[in-house]
Length: 497
Ligand SMILES: Cc1cc2nc3c(=O)[nH]c(=O)nc-3n(C[C@H](O)[C@H](O)[C@H](O)COP(=O)(O)OP(=O)(O)OC[C@H]3O[C@@H](n4cnc5c(N)ncnc54)[C@H](O)[C@@H]3O)c2cc1C
Image 1 (tube, rainbow, N blue to C red):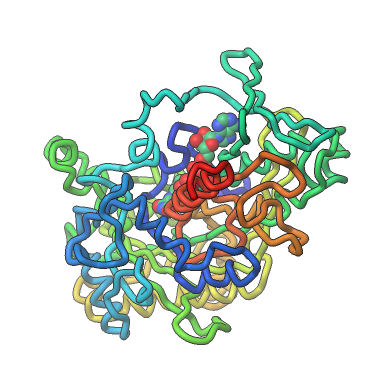
Image 2: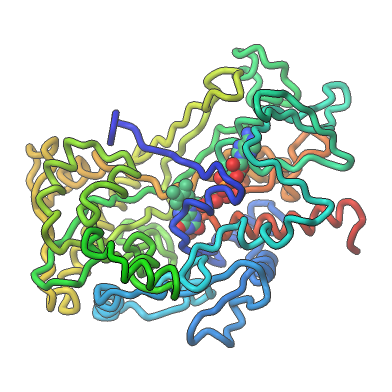
């Protein structure tokens, strides 16, 4: 990666990262949420959180119209992606060939393969802003200040009570007071950052920046993320099966997309299908997946390195050497997501200036189990593509070695380890930086009602509270957390029984 670093963008927009994400809609499986509840987080079992997923969802999913696992009256549009390449069917057929069932992966019967359900409406992105704010903009009790940066939560140190927020807009500093409570919802990087700037965080760390400590909590000391390896291209001997950007950038396709929400431009950057597998590295009993596969109809070369490779900050030398030669070929990749990494990251302040980004440490692949699982996932993908549904298109693994890994035999464990350490890409699911947990959890920042420990009238409501890894991309879980928190807040202030 450029400079040996991964790129961690966030959506700095109304709607947050749902404005820039891949739109994959996943919720986490019952075991995930039941484990979170069993750890002392009352109210968070699957049975208890499911109603909030159903509440926000407006599903329009063929053949699932009567499913009890989908909501139809909410604000968040969920659909299958209208565009499907032939490779998406090959992925599902290959799964079947290896014994995987077709499932609705957002139901409790999740262990199998499926087309991706996406947060889109008629083929177009359905961000949280579109879903929850656009139609409510004129409400008298809602004020949206865009282009505005919160710099601090205002807390009375004597009573340890949050009473407002300091923010900057057009170079001016303002303060706004809260009548009831302050809700921090700045995402998994900025919520812990703002807490630390406001005096809530690891005491010794805050003191090293001369920040007066309001509450000593382990803010930012836990961070999990989901990684992938987007650099496993396969080449086909059949034409017009993949999305090649130059070929698809036509007026006709633009019209198809803008008028009818269809065609290759409605694709999630070529990602089409999903499959849950359990590798032989898993220690779990039963059908608990450790890897999610993401079938695609494009590779890093399909846009000539202009969008996806640049978007993940892939180093130019690697692109030129390994992927550029594929630009004129039909190529595709199957991605995977390491669902339960054992490697743990953290984040720290860089300075006490709120405009300085915090220091982010993913610490990916620092646990040997993660390396072994990732290698098993790569081997599984190769096996999947070696089945008749892909072989009828002549799919072949691109076996050019990464130039920095030439000393290893292609396909050996050492080679794959070198490769995945070279291209370690995040799926941007950082969590647990303001970890939710019961009072006896020394790492907990918020309680199961999302109230910051030791501080009155302050809650964190976003993906930073998710305490452990889940089988999900984190957009829908963040929205579910918002729905659930809304009920908690109403209950706290006696607005519902
Ligand atoms: C490139 C990318 C692809 C992804 N793909 C998927 C996917 O396909 N499916 C999926 O489920 N998830 C995906 N995710 C993850 C998902 O989008 C996030 O988990 C989800 O948006 C998290 O919601 P959040 O509210 O916790 O944080 P965010 O969405 O990051 O929202 C935080 C909000 O706070 C605002 N903010 C932050 N700091 C301040 C401040 N100091 N002052 C004022 N405002 C502030 C930001 O502008 C933003 O609006 C992706 C994420 C990225 C970045």
